[in-house]
Length: 381
Image (cartoon, rainbow, N blue to C red; front, top):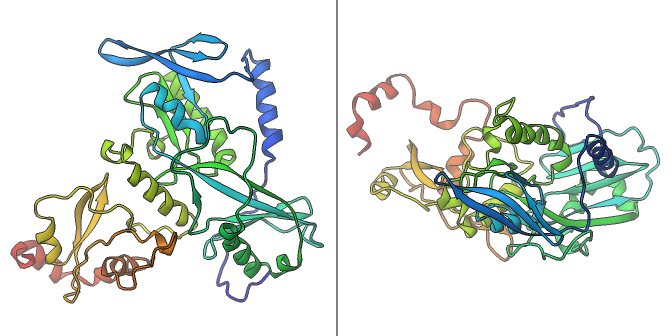
């Protein structure tokens, strides 16, 4: 492994791997043993709802084999979840991507290598037998804005090497022997991604009894145990055993969750920054200035650096950079899909100044200066 450019790493010895097929098979058997029923070759054709006491609620599920009467439905259909959600008349803010990984031929001496996640190169290397499963999060993913074909099931896509080359090149940079190793197989399938790279879990407000359990951003197996337990708690007990607010299906403002352009651009940005270091004052660059107040331009001209919450631009702080107006520019898709990266972008520069675990540049405004601003608010106008 090439470690010439590594300053430090974090080792987690308790981490491991799980075979998805074996895991799902074990859960299926346990489900049947506990009285559950699995219906194969059964397609959902509709969700029956009825307004009861002023609220629309689930009353049944229509299938190609007849009606199933029920007051609760949990939508765990992954990339197909928007189709089922549409049947119930609810939003499902996710975008399917063609997401891929490849499996290498055997590599001598690789047997005890730990799983590797490289945040700078945006790739991972995971032990699989005597070879490696490698992939990552490229800046130009193959998105499916119109959704997955309804009749596409139990299949894979042809791998687009122009898209995946980013991951191969970066994996070779970290582990040069990959360049000399053949590939055993490629896997490219539909995976669902959300605007903040977090799952959609819980009961929807627009239709009582309809629960979402989708949008797992390629972390389905990793999150399945906890997410499944808490979904069951929601459906049976009406609450969760731990704080699940960050995954709440109702966390988006309707102006966002109903805006396909917002969902697409934000899901792309969240995908590209999946392995980026998380700093507390970071802000999105995609789909800015959706909702502004009457003072937006006035404050912007005075050096305001805006933050966005629920699609609404709100003042964050006032920068001292007198030579730049911190205006948000049109999303450049990080230079992908034929777009040019903005060469000069003052707002992005202000974000870069906060990318630190020490004191950010704006913290120089302290002590008497903060007191002066508090006592003389007119100094900002």
